Length: 401
Image 1 (tube, helix red, strand yellow):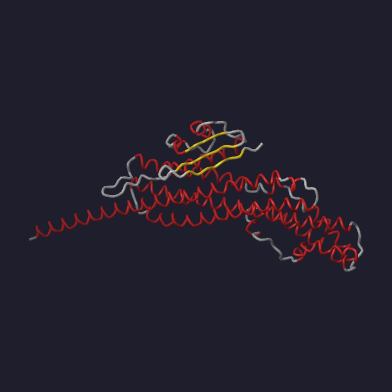
Image 2 (tube, rainbow, N blue to C red):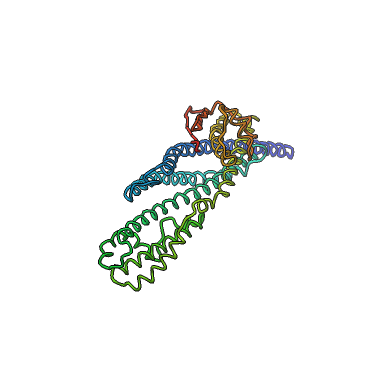
């Protein structure tokens, strides 16, 4: 009787072990299935968003650099018209960047949730799952930070455009009244500087000002100097317009003081985050290449195979790597101040391998058929192909002299 009990107990234990093993393997497969789908969908949506953003960004930069109404206007009206053209393009870029930031913030929680499942896996598959998830979370955190910096800069430019408009109104008013202190004469033109009235409120802030200050404090310091300048000028001219000449004369000193502090050195205020952005870009490159290398290992070692279950080998890491080389080309230029001279995909990858951080863990394993590359006089063109769906996304880098 004891022998029968022991035998039954052994059978039961063995059955439980088999069930646990089968259950664990299914859990492992399900984790990788969810991870594959989330990786593929997340990256495709993000890369598509980046592709769609490139043209508006290029249009904005071209308008900023080449708009003659803005750079060499015939008069104030011509200048404001050029400024409006540029700002209209800027608003499109801002809208795209905001949408991209929202997309990143939507995708990040999906991988955060998958981390709990990945942490329960062990062995080689467990190590790879953790690598993919943790790299993706770190990547999204980098991208969100980079997006915040980019948006801060764009919001800052938008504030400067408002300042340019208000300064144009001030200059037109100043030309009209000259050095006159006659109340009735000044009051005829005073409505031209009504845009400056908002600066009289000490609590006035531009939209997103606190957000910008977290990344570009020097820019906001200059913006505050402009606020003080406009406020002092408005107060003085308002007193002149109602006959308070003595008060206005005293206020003119504040105008002079604040005017000298309002000069903006663009080479410094918009370079505050250059080092941070460079570090983020390099870290993104490392995370994407390391993650893709882990997926390559997963596939080359046959870890995607499960008995009676669908194989999990349809990862879009080559599609991701294609866009990574476009991204790395930008890093190459920032380091060398030169554009690649390569004409083929293989030569481009070799040329990019001369800078750090290195991506040699994936360079030799990248499926080059997923990229079409051309290097022409004024532009570098990249076409990335999703080999599972056939969909293609295009990217370009405009060569600037």
